[in-house]
Length: 84
Image (cartoon, rainbow, N blue to C red):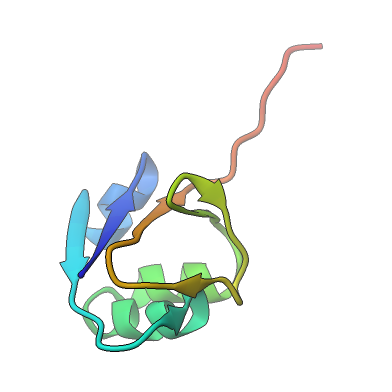
């Protein structure tokens, strides 16, 4: 089972803060986005279009990162920051 967390505005888009998913074999972020699209199409599209930051086990990840059973995947909106 993997844990999926949505932060900030992505909670509203996904319509949940957290989800769990049973996976039989390791999957990529792209494959996860396809699974998420079945229940939250807009969220799946945002992930595929790389409009979010992704972490796996609190390490930044890319679309080809492999997710294993027991992993935690977090989706975060892009951050901008700093004052001039």
